[in-house]
Length: 204
Image 1 (cartoon, rainbow, N blue to C red):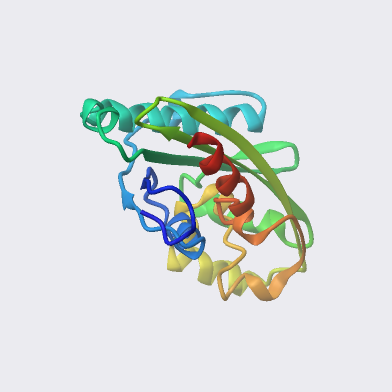
Image 2: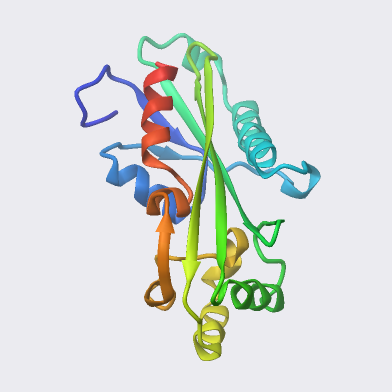
């Protein structure tokens, strides 16, 4: 259900990310949540755009496999499933969620006085018609020097362990050291609003 002037439809957000929940709410949508239980390490691609797209598709397929799909195809009102994925690219290498506190510390130190790019995908599947729309977005973040004590505080707090590349630009500890952004904050946070809105409309 949405509060916007559009046909009536329901949304399932296939993500446990608090950032994505916040962004979709900010867009004016109401939605339910289902997390995809996939082994992301089983999907490997060299190009970040291809990797995030394959992961978002795999999340959608995993969630659909758990649903009684005929319940959605027989309803008048369509239900849209939104899945997404994101990686950080730094020094030409793809970074996913840090595997340890040490790796998170290493990642964040690397951003100090440098820059990183985020590559994020969005896949919208219409569960009534099986139509699927997909796209990806890229943004960049440039950093001032991040003091060691700030990095330690971020790592000890632990939120950086659950995001791609340990990159939390919106965090109160991190944001003072962001020098510039190329692209939108919502894209860097994992759900680009303009892309998501377009894919929702196209999937209907």
